[in-house]
Image 1 (cartoon, rainbow, N blue to C red):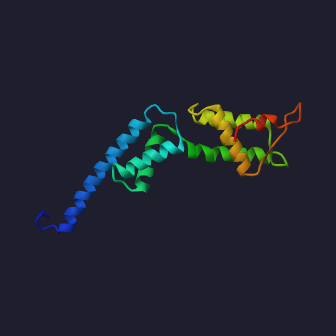
Image 2: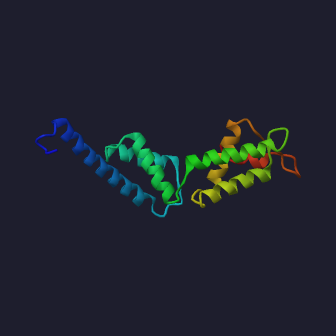
Image 3: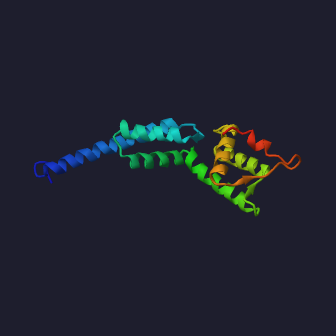
Length: 160
């Protein structure tokens, strides 16, 4: 069909699809450049990337999120929100080993080490401890007392 035979709406749709594809491509390159050599991406950084896709590249929120997560996954960047869900599963499994829904100090430290390994050490140990403590408190799990002194001082020292 020739351009003269095409309806005005069809021409506008074709032009917007081309522009939209260019926006998607530019946003994809922006995400690739941002993710280069990153081992870990926090939720706030992920939100900023998605906001940039919506604001600068005029992409829908869902499309921006889908593109960003796919590119970050391809570049093997660990996303905080995915790791948080996985860590919660690990803590849930640890809490089910005993009958009192307790997580021992060793299990707590193991969970912190697992998270840091998943994040390829892109987050500090202290930040992971704070995050793990928050998860334990949100899920009403309890922590075990230290073996020798029978206190939870090790847990209470972690800032809230």
